[in-house]
Length: 384
Ligand SMILES: NC(=O)c1ccc[n+]([C@@H]2O[C@H](COP(=O)([O-])OP(=O)(O)OC[C@H]3O[C@@H](n4cnc5c(N)ncnc54)[C@H](O)[C@@H]3O)[C@@H](O)[C@H]2O)c1
Ligand SMILES: [Fe+2]
Image 1: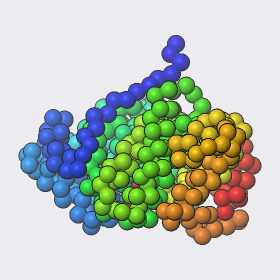
Image 2: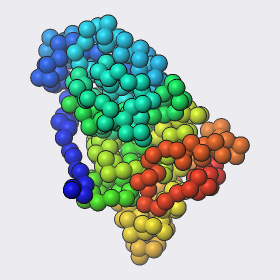
Image 3: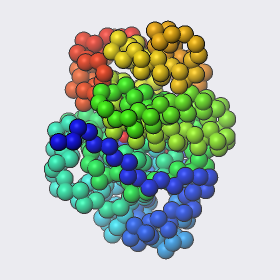
């Protein structure tokens, strides 16, 4: 029996202006009428228009759906699926951040599967209940964070449980990802910073997660280096297309790497999104230093390696591992992200419920050090 499964199947187009090639790609996938899934901010930033022009230039018709929020709900995904059916669409083109990309994936599930979404929850083995005959999808990320463009899951808050739920299937991976740095130029500094920290957290948690995956490890380390070198530049010089491109690469690499697994930080971040509507990357940024300190006793050599990849120089392994969380805090400070949860309206009073929900979240199962609900409670307190 195989000990591990390693897959890297996405076709990825990279480059300034790569969006113009999207029509040909849609045609090659057999699309004649696409549902363009986006959100109001992305449409306002003028980013759906070039996608629609590229589709039209290849004689692919398009209908737009852009009514969704940063922590998308099942109702929003169902409205998008209704638009897909009403339009007689035969493919999905997502343009936006993780929210739009995830909703596009959920649309593919809703138009092909009949079971309710809570039963398709990945934590309950939902993938085995799906046939996976999804319509084709092209993903154009306009944030550099989630890497959902190369990921096999979509996250949505399910109505019945009120929980942010991962819907996973190997065939949910987009057929084509278009990484066009110009599509991220208009991203405001605060969102560039928060989404960039999501990418960094993916790389770090993947590198530290349990399991044997040498390719994921190498990709994760390179992604950490890119974040260390380019995230501050992308935040402070929004039109620096080299920095924007490097962060798109880091985000894509983070999601390729986290097929190995994530960790405690994502379990802490998910309830902060579902319960308090915190941006996902920001929630990770606030919790990550405490998680690194917590994990040090289990994976010290790897944490020392992360410190090196972030540019910490000198010192033995002990010192480097000790300094890693400080390096992450320093980067977070330089790019203007909050230092704690309190400024985001979270108080001690909220912690017991958050810890309970974080414990129910599946991500911490891959964490290199086992956690209890009490540990999660303590990690939130240290991150206040
Ligand atoms: N599928 C996965 O593997 C995965 C991984 C991590 C996170 N997620 C999910 O992704 C979502 C977060 O995604 P996100 O961090 O990309 O944020 P997002 O998609 O919510 O976008 C954040 C905001 O930025 C705006 N925006 C996006 N691109 C822009 C641009 N180029 N110019 C101007 N404004 C722009 C949007 O309108 C929105 O208001 C969460 O729901 C999270 O749960 C999914
Ligand atoms: Fe994430």
